[in-house]
Length: 441
Image (tube, rainbow, N blue to C red):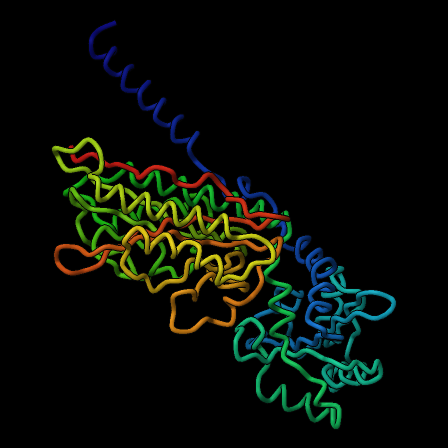
């Protein structure tokens, strides 16, 4: 075998190995994620969680009106996402148990019935008002409290238009005073997640954290930019077939400089001495959302570990996060969780941070449920006074903020995700224990 043949053989072997390596790393999103479990989970949520939500809200019946092009935000939670003509969905408890009844235009009634979500789907012929039929049923049943989606505090419970509400009030006549806001029903229902949903959120959270660690390994100080990290994470999302956990332009938020709040990643070059924040979330099955932050420090040339002040900031933020988790249990208020970590912030000498300690996370990054804030604010949000319950899921921070030499502020916000169990809260995944260190050469 001559030298040319040997070289050619080596090249071919290397090319083959490279291809095999690439094939092993390739992801088929449909195979990786499997069939979307939402249809089964949705039905289970309606039958298991909604009856309790109605009872806890002291509501006899909940009516949701769905329609084409300008649909109610709760529509896909009840099977009304494909509404064409106006349909009325009723959910109620009576002495015989929980029931779901839908008055649907005939054009969509058959398909809706085939989904087996509801006890009964009544086909409404053209020219007949489904809403009027629903109201007639409500009056016949003599419900005393009927929730409708009109709310001044919860956007998920505020899907009814002015004209829809006016029409329903006219149909109710002298009984219109029985109409109440569905704010509490939607709150009680959406704030609780089934165990199956928690497991999906756990998987999403793990990917979110793992990819951030991978992204930090790609950083070249003095060359890489915040936007480069964001681009790397966007590529991971594409590879795995997931979408953004919130506004695409601001996900991920990568920041190696002064605080920018909720923002987009810029072309700032990452330099030695920088503390880097990645705030990142993904949406899986086009339904469930993660929200995780990971932090790194870029070592200067003469450093083998982060300086004492940076380590103090990191450990302070981490301690605040752990304190929040310990305070997060059934029966306490959201404001109490905020107070637990802010007490440590003050003892550690942190600058004031305007953000709440945490928020519910699940169907969106800032989901329905108790807000974990308000203990040091000028006023306490109503949602911060809400009681934490088993089955709720949160994303929450431990903060430490300090002044930079240029007068700006930098904040470490150790953000993790947790689920509330029977008597305590548990992290969904292993939390970040150590500040990630990036070498300068």
